[in-house]
Image (cartoon, rainbow, N blue to C red):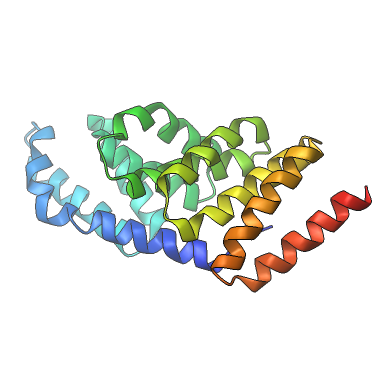
Length: 202
């Protein structure tokens, strides 16, 4: 099951809005570069952010990775790099990049933090590490907007289904159902209703 177009769009809009402040403040971060190539590397950082803002995550990842290997970027830019890994399909690297710094990101706004939790949770889900994905999806539901909760609740239900915990799977599917009804997501409503029927038949 793929992430809904609504969720992908919401995440992309969030990334753009979150990173739009970086250009205005990027020079405040230039102090991390202390070599003779300071200006050149600052321009590379600006280029990476520009790619990130425009949704060119593969290109952004290339530049962030080069700079991180040379200087060890601060947590926010590492978080951007982790998001790029997620969108580039490098799920193990996304987890390795984002999960260790989640506690350092608590100073950011809840919805920004929600994006990072979702990327780690979804990466675990794609890696079929369902037991690891569940608490991160749960954390996402505490941080995200209400119209985004349904997708994480559905994912938790899918995790429990894969782990053959039918009772918990049904519980989370029903919770997700309530959010999809509230926000009139008919495709997801139909999907969950089919899943609940399959679970009941088994």
